[in-house]
Amino acid sequence: MAKRIAVLSDTHGLLRPEVLSAISGCDAIIHGGDINKPEIIDRLKEIAPVYVVRGNNDKEWAEHISATLTFQIEDCRFFLVHNKKEVPKDLTSIDAVIFGHSHKYFEQVIDGRLWLNPGSCGKRRFDQEIALAILTVEGKNLSAQKVVIQP
Image (tube, rainbow, N blue to C red; front, side, top):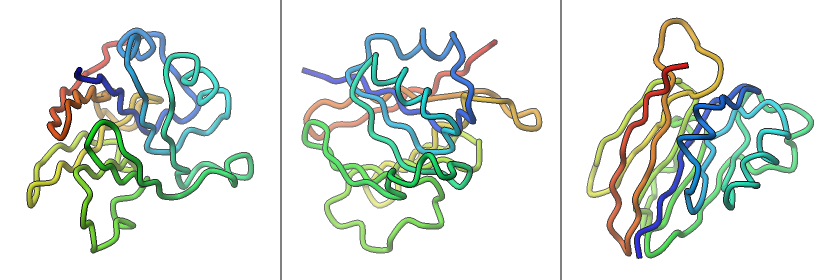
């Protein structure tokens, strides 16, 4: 059975009601860092299991959170990092690379591997859109849907 996975990044201390509504009912949540407050993770955990990495703005409170994370959902292996520049060259056995930092949505299959930045769904930066992604994972099949939030 397919799993719905919410992919967020760069909340910067703001978890919008529209975001909570968009991710309601998801089977898991991936957060690409720059969380800024532990309460954000606590709230997300009330919805579904959370996979999270520390971002460059996550200070002392987040020292226990890893900068990178490799995990599996269904038959898909994920590599999660805040800054794309920190992705290792060897991605053997990785099906999807999730990252944040730039606040810009990016979704592309490169060498058979999904690269996804869900954008930022926290505080608006410049005039960039507020966005997240919903992944559908079934076995080894992955598909992403961009969700733009209109606050």
